[in-house]
Length: 172
Image (cartoon, one colour):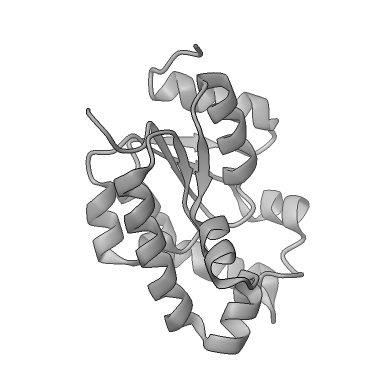
């Protein structure tokens, strides 16, 4: 493959995409990019604030554009926001790319992120809402992924190595 990201990470909020992405980029000697960070930098506001102030449709359009730009421009490790796979055009852009889905169960999500603060989609009943989000998204993550890596009870370093192994990439 010429051009495009070396690795794309997808998965639910709190699955470790940012942490693992940074580790992978470091190990492979390539740049790391996070589309959520791109949106925050461009808008000058946190994602939670964008949801509250502008609404989810507005945010999803920003996300769609950020993913398209990153897929076109970035050649290192790329992490996508948890809901990026909801957009059919984004899923089409990911077809054929080395996408790793970082999966986790609800208990791991509770342990990692507490399913609360700064998670606008989980504001009311976090456990139930997380399960509903995953029921709606799991098949989309699986659809775009070349590999699925479970993050439950693994350190970020172990997850990063599992991604490298699953995608048959070597540290440089």
